[in-house]
Length: 191
Image (cartoon, rainbow, N blue to C red; front, side, top):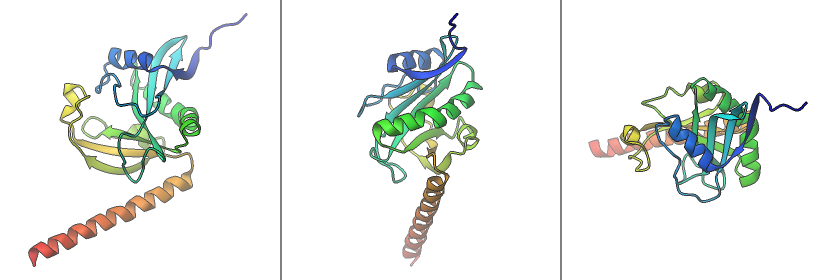
């Protein structure tokens, strides 16, 4: 006798993902971002019912030295129960990221964390690289509750620890160069 699996993790379509994002009250709402490639979304099911979704999209603009040819964005992660997000992020790094990387030829995944609403534990606990903190303007596609949140942390994932370490060193050098430019600017102003 064949029975359905208790748990499955599969590619789903954007309409299915958006339905869940709205139903579960994701703070950014449905994923209606500009499409530069067909999105690749994943769903975690329990006995056939979606319990969590992850949406992957191409980058909208360059960030942290990445462009659309080198990275893609984990643009939404949402679950029916918060603890499921931990399982989702692990399934993403082990199974979904390699599939998207092969399909789009972009080895790095990045994700933005709203620093006012989240501490970043989801990414930190799964060894994502904290690339940098940023501030930005409001996102007109966001729900009202998140439009004014400007502090974000950008996290990056690459399956190679060596690649993550090299990127961490690159980001540290860039940050030190930025600080030095700021110091020089202040000295010129004071002179």
